[in-house]
Length: 260
Image (cartoon, rainbow, N blue to C red; front, side, top):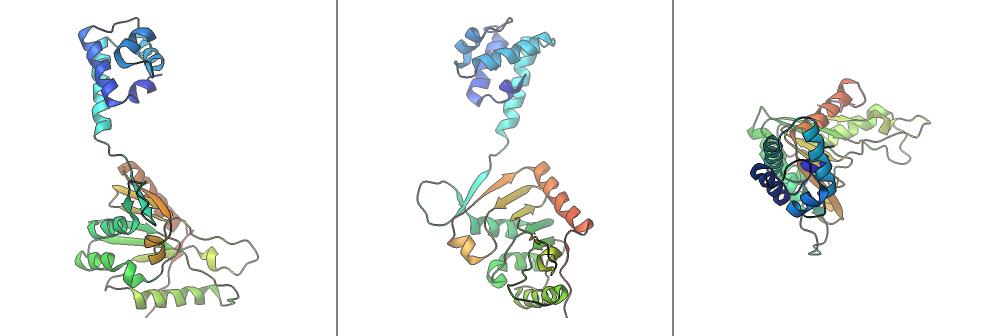
């Protein structure tokens, strides 16, 4: 029942707290009186929430302190950034996908999880990350990706994975490479429908989460119309990182084979 109080806009929360502190607003809390303080849009829900707190024994000043504390906490939380690829139409205020990837790759201090479906031109895409990894030996980077079985390819699954690993190593622009994993169902020769690792996301130092429709390809970063969100939320970041780790621990994704 107190949800309407937690969701108040900052200006309405401040007026409501002030009215409770000064005695302008006292129990019983009628919607018409609340509307006089904050306007009519949220008045009914707010009045019901105030009545619930009053019934639970919360005096007006204590309720006001709670409202101010929630408003202060919300003010410290940055909303997600919209991240965009494609033609600049001037109607969307957002950040460019390539710039966000570069920022995340170039500023990581401890841990990066990167999940993507397609990688093209690693030397161009991962230059910033490779330099960061070589400069910071303690930075752990795990890459989850898809290995494609091309149409008509009858090679053994292990052979497809080894070819990918050889090509990835040859084109990686740095000395240290990420720990790379893939979903083995993508190269399976079975009669089933198969599956691919299709998630496109980055977890940055257990602090930031970037979820996007864009693959790590020049076309997706610059020409395609792609959309994503960059979220600053430690709980969400740790949850997604734990999920990626569980994919590895349970064997749903396996290590890309080492190659000489």
